[in-house]
Image (cartoon, rainbow, N blue to C red; front, side, top):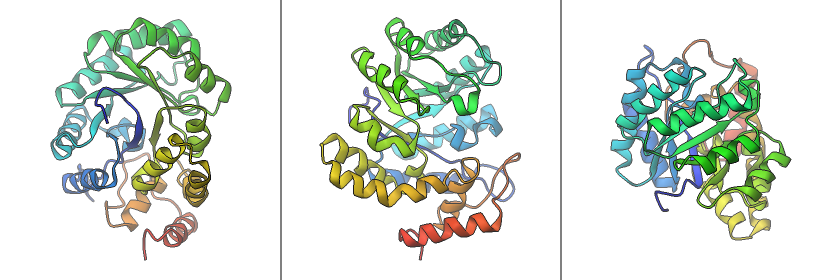
Length: 297
């Protein structure tokens, strides 16, 4: 995979914590090795799935630095570095680049609901401040408002290093507009695991996936099969993973996926407030599904 193209299978990585709430660096290194072995193309620490709102600047730096060192060039390291205060988002992006991130994933400002011009200027500032590729992260379900396709395409044509969008809406109309009208070299990724098959079939470039934490090899295979036009085989994998993908959002991400990884022996089941463990009945559902997929015995 060319390190310039932000495409293929990207994992929205969880952040493993120890029982006393510090970064579990040994588990973090294990996760990177797990993804290198599985053929994941891009690893993205410090995003929403990595509990980014609870990480300090020092922790963000440390996590990215460890992931980069452990990856050792075998996969691309992009990093979550966004917030709803533009000045702070710029500082976070600079911090991530200093730590060795090869690209920046920057969430659309949430809660304060800027206009489209506000979104445009926010991303323009970030793109000017760093020399690494920037991925716009549009997630209306979490931010409270939508970055329009027109705004994303305007940024893609005006800023040399705005390189991709993680489109985490299920707005097919908007997705199609992005795929149809994107400039050369700009990639469109889905942030919605349930949409991987239709999204890739429509001409999307890849996924930033939560389920890739648990089944990185199969998410990569699903993408490869659709790209090769082997839809029957892709559908089999998609059907096999559909229940797992749904259970990953039985409570707010990353609680279910982190519980899974704990059962799989990859991390401790440790969250930072305000996130807490799921109730037993939900755990039972996830456990059964992991057993039926053969991920735990």
